[in-house]
Every structure is written in structure tokens, then in C-alpha cells.
Figure 1: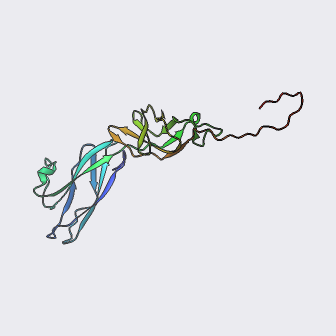
Figure 2: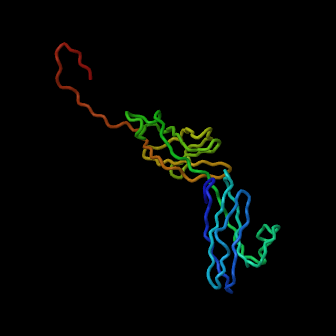
Figure 3: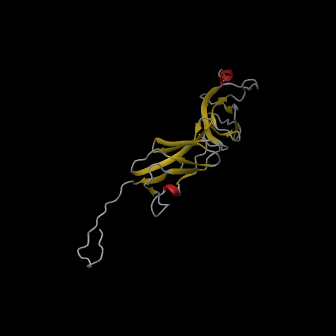
Amino acid sequence: VTTPDTPVTINLTGVDVEGDAIRFNAFNAPNLTFSLAGSPVTPVGQEATTTLTIIPDSGFVGTQEFTVFVHDPADAINPTQTSASQIASFADVQTFTVTVTQDSPTGLDLEASSDSGTDDADNVTNDSTPQITISGVADGALVQIFDGATQVAEGTASGTSITLTTDTLSDGVHTLTATQTIGNVESTASPALEVTIDTMIGPFTSTPGTTADLDVEFAY
């Protein structure tokens, strides 16, 4: 798993049971290319190692199968042999999935207009359906807010940020995160924002006065 424009590095190891030389190779896949570090490793009876770097195409987001194989260096790979089934008779083939996910949203912020009380930046509010701004999203992404594992808001971004109004939140502390989805690929969660909902009116006590001046209106 990686993020857009970020290569994936995988260490490959192998050994021939008869001690012969082996060569690592791979197939380019749609939206993915590769490079292999070093040359074929040939020490008799020893484990061969190399580094495979898989490079996503610029801007690609999605899931793609990738095939790597190991074979005798004397076996020439015909350029028309571009699938695992075509080389399975003389090579050991491994296929795995590479997923390029969206970048996570960079942060969440409780809108000042939803942050009640004298401090509009303490993330404590009596607004049980607060407005949350999510930053660091892609234009056109489906953005979702989660309270723990429960989705409480969603919308489509127009620009690099979006403000969403949550479903009704109960009194207490809520840990909110956000994801963004493009092309059916969802990002990992953003950094969390803790918001405290407090809709209860605090206790109020008062003691009436016991004395008053004559001829002065007294109200309590």
C-alpha cells in the first residue's frame, strides 16, 4: 500500500535447491512500472537477494495486480511473454496486489460559529450538530467524517477543503476523523479532532435577600 507518486520498495530473496544461479524479473502492469537493483546473483548454494521498486504512474490511484518471477538466467524471456501463465512452465511466479490510496485529509477544525461559549476555539460546544471543516482534500473527492467507526457526515469537495454539518451527536467527548475517496479508493483516516458536546444547563442556586429599604421596590 502506498500513496500517489510514492514508489514501493520490496526486498526479494530466493535460492535454487540445486544451487544454480537465479534471476529475478517482473512484468510492468497498467499504471505501474518497476526497477530491480543489482545484477543476477549467482553464488552457488547461497540465497539471492535484490530490491524491487514499484513506481506508480503520476497521479494514479487504485488497485493493480503485479507479477514478479524468478528463473534461470539462461532462460530468455520472449518480449511476447507478458503474463504469468506464459512463463509458469519455467519460472516461479508470484502475483500480489499493489494499492495506491488517496492522501489522507490533513486536518479537521470545529467552525468558530459552532464553538459556543466565551472561547470559540476550545472545541467545547452546546451545538449537537456542529460544522466541521476538513482541509487537505482533493477537488471532487467524497469526504466522510467518522465518530469512531460511525459515519456522521459526508459531502463532495469543491476545492481543497470542505465544511460539513454532522448528524446529531450525544453529550460527551467525540473523536472525529475524516477520509476522502476518489475512484472507489478510500484514504486512511486524518488526524483526529476531539469535540465535546455539552447541551446541559449547569446547576443554578440563589439566595434571596433578607433585608430591604423602605419605600424601595424589591424584586427577586
